[in-house]
Length: 153
Image 1 (cartoon, rainbow, N blue to C red):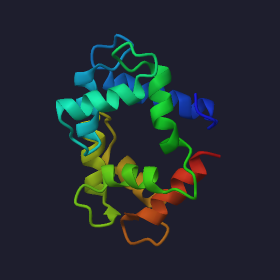
Image 2 (cartoon, rainbow, N blue to C red):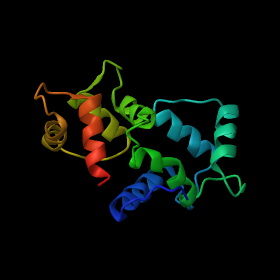
Image 3 (tube, rainbow, N blue to C red):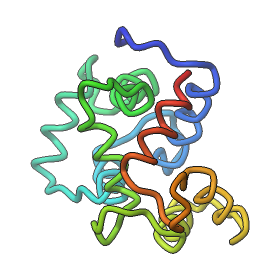
Image 4 (cartoon, rainbow, N blue to C red):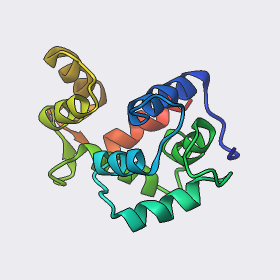
């Protein structure tokens, strides 16, 4: 595991995310499931690129990503380092589908639907409003970063 410390809540969030990507619920993310996951994160990859990612993430060389390896992969996103925003930026870009620098209610709703998370429009609007400190109706990268840094505490 990394030197990053995750809260029980963050571990549970990762467990839920792992379950979404582990389509056949066998406790492992296969090469095909990894490719689907990368596509969801707006980072489609070729079979060869997926094999390279798998080789890097699959620490025990069993050909699949187990939950421990998934936590290792995702912990930088869950515990952002203020000196390196690249992981946070990648997460932000996942939601900012049109790459205009703001996450809209429509974009958040589309991502949540693609993850099969069923929230009402008012719940989605509430999520945006909570992060939208300048009250312009969208979430900027700085607002997103602020929310994510608060969540790690």
